[in-house]
Length: 174
Image: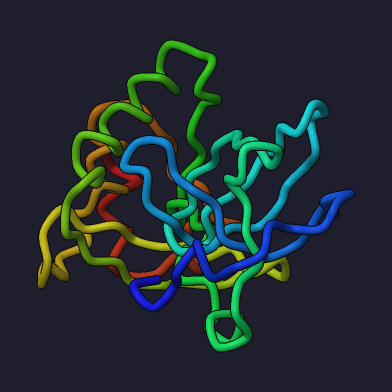
């Protein structure tokens, strides 16, 4: 977005439509990023998802926080991908273990360089991954997925233990 100049771009036309790809100003750093309109909340407020990072924010279209993107910036695929940890059943965040599991993942992965192995992709595009806390690590027993099982914060979930990948066979014994 370094090539984006907000003063040279038009505000989004009203009514602002769900699904519109645009530029939105992020409140934490006052910078502009590519975003997708999730919903209009009224009084100019719009929920957006920053498509290259995955985070959400409410911005105000009436205050010039939403702009049209130039065509050249619309041609790139979103860089953020939805993903979940493969082979695991994790409790909901609203439960005690779910909150603890979320904190473990956040402590390892937020603002860090990590590695993943993509295991599968669901029909909605979401990825199933093995998450490693350090770049270059490939031992599945050192993955975040395995750590969650070791700490009792997740259960191994596969359709059949016999058909599970060899890399997770030891997880069943934890």
